[in-house]
Length: 183
Image (cartoon, rainbow, N blue to C red; front, side, top):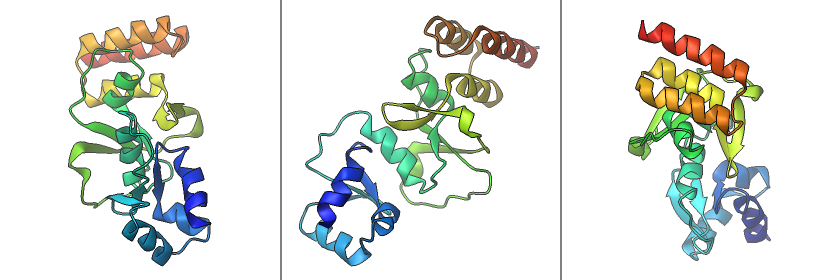
């Protein structure tokens, strides 16, 4: 049954499923549209649907940001990653998401998101609460280039090391890069 197949996917994505994922399961657009008409699914963004009966958590908005891109390599990044890892007192005004350089997103509904273009390798992407998220070291490096205030990055370096999210070697390398930026 289409609903059950989509529900299985959605349970791993905070209640969301994409049209592309439905198609990969052999579920056509018409069937998805019927599920929307019946109220089983609701449109969350173009090509992204949510099961309204799935419990909504604050984390769901981050999953929606990643799925909104429709890029399989998309991950939370930059200041958002520092925030969700709780290694800095940063308050990101937008959700930062990184996609591959070759992508060009022109999607409605992205006003809450800041999209960055960078080719990430598999070792630079991890998981936070089942949401693809760059590693803490990658996020700090991105924020150094992005221009995040130094005191917040120093805090991230210290907390990241204390929490075991970055190694001593990564901390030293990133601290040197931060110092070079600030010169």
